[in-house]
Amino acid sequence: MLPATPNITIGAPLIELSEIDSTNIYAMSQIEQGNANSGSCFRADFQSLGKGQHGRVWESAKGKNLLCTYILELKTLKNDKNWGPADQKGFSAAIAMGVRAFLGAFTSEILHIKLPNDIYWNDRKAGGILIENKLRGAEWTWSVVGIGLNINQTQFSTDAGNPVSLQQITSKHYELAEMQKQLSHHLGVAITEWLQEGETNTLLKLNSYLKAK
Image (tube, rainbow, N blue to C red):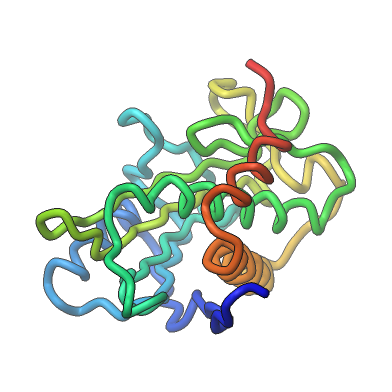
């Protein structure tokens, strides 16, 4: 029997930002200034310097998509565990699975995960994840989880990554506030399952959804 693990609730408090350079940059500054609460989510209507993988900028029209960063202090997940860099792989996989499950709740179409953490609908990019971690010596202390998901945007100025939005996939418009709640729920479920099942099982699940190169 798996050891009991409390359900992880993230997304509260939710801090709404009209315009910011990057929710990841803002979230990291809150941690460094000692103003951060584990589980918080910072959501912006617009990012002027949205951060993608390898220094890329994430394109998003104002007020159309989910642009957010969650922060977690690792000791709040299991305070009797020594968290280290080796634990980050399973955590990253859990986050990707949670985002995929969120999108999968609104479309029956096949959604793939492209490493390190992009979400694809067929060959079109529906979202991306950028996880940045803070260490104190060999201890993993905080994780900063940036997520950008194309929700209601229907026109893109660039075809980099061949973007697609949920509205384009389903022909439906979505309320972002409710979508944020749903995303938080799915992430909490995925993190809880990772804590209960361990890295090996989480990675096996991830592998079943990986996008072929």
